[in-house]
Picture 1 (spheres, helix red, strand yellow):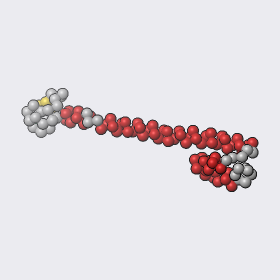
Picture 2: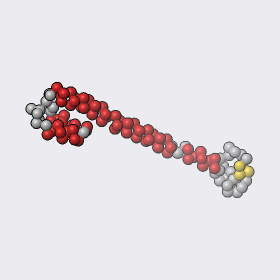
Picture 3: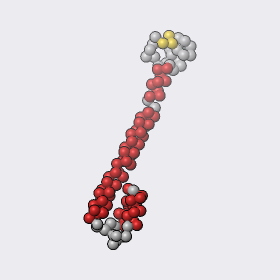
Picture 4: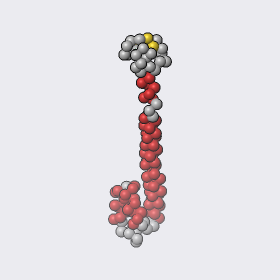
Length: 110
Ligand SMILES: [Zn+2]
């Protein structure tokens, strides 16, 4: 048994409205706040945020790893490295490595 917060009348536990004064009980408030869908919207946006931050982390990784492999292989074989790749290295992978590559005069395409 619970009691009405307004008039103090005895209520059934599952009552959503007080039969004496007609005001909504605590159970009614809890149920209405659950059904307004805001919780669901918050959950959806948080899941979308997680997915996007996951992509934001994985996408550069998928970029920089092949880039690093390519640059390392070309440096080992003394092959020329294009300016585009150097700039990409500077921007996305490593600022210092990119500057060093751009300053490198050994590659003919420089
Ligand atoms: Zn009441």
